[in-house]
Length: 192
Image (cartoon, rainbow, N blue to C red; front, side, top):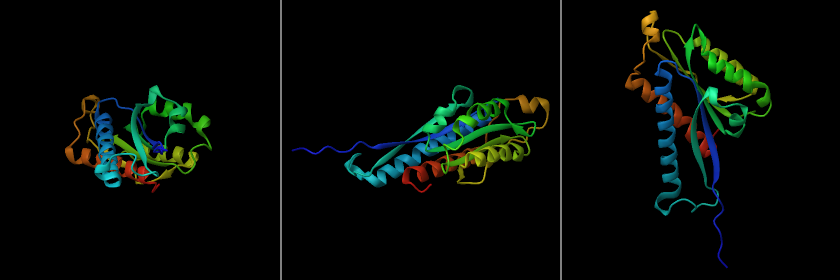
């Protein structure tokens, strides 16, 4: 009688984001890449050359980066970990991100308790206002912060530089990649 290998339990890392000038989107791409690399590294260490399915307790993690205007609370409820990424606009999170939270807050209330999250902010010179807003919402959902908000400053202060497409420095992209990797590895390994 042949024995079947049990299916791998699929976990999900959801990256909820918005970007106006490409800065936040670049950081999201770096975070997703870092998450994918952490997953590949963890799975390689766990399974070696024998391939998936060699361990009955195996699990894997998928990474989904979704613009905040295209999803709602259902995506959050299916996520095992979440990264929120937004530009700061006028000392606050971007309007579409706020609208996402308004749509998702009550349907997800008391249904996300204890899940890990992190925050990524792209800002001109501060970023603290947007970070505080997201932390307050996450606290209401009883999410568990796994890192201090990562705030990337572009230095944009004039109307022209604020509206201009953003080029994020490689060191900042590396920090976003590390954050994505940290969140993914912890979720995959059950640390969070």
